[in-house]
Image 1: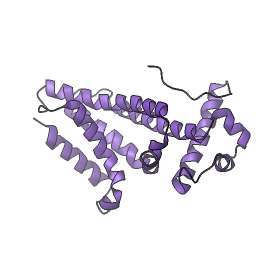
Image 2: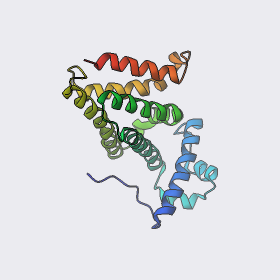
Image 3: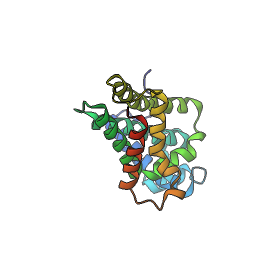
Length: 204
């Protein structure tokens, strides 16, 4: 399935990337501060330094901006994990590297991840399906590592797809449950806890 792209009135790809990034960065700042419903296109235009007209050259509406923010994060998440697996052969080392790559990104972009969970339900079904398609690629990365570990008798028998989802949820959970977990030393203690907990659960 081909990746969904937001239609723009501008033909120059580099300019589109630059302006869409400028708009998305501004939108995240305002959505996080004022909420999705408390932020208008005019607010984003003013804060980004673009006029109200130019914004509509890159996005039809506010929902498309929210979708683009969400899409960029799940794509970045997938890319970061893949990059950190290059040259790694051992499944145990792979799962450790994959957990750390995702954890580091979630920790760095806490506000964006919180926004995704809080406002993602507002997206149209076609946008949600595209996000789930991309996120599915990340789940498959973890799933493949787990299957490889089972094949090599390094991980015990379990449902790899379910386990892959649980690993991702654990990484996200530090943000979603931060109200109760805020007193745990972070970020290193959180990462070590997550890694040790998962390895204890999956190791043969």
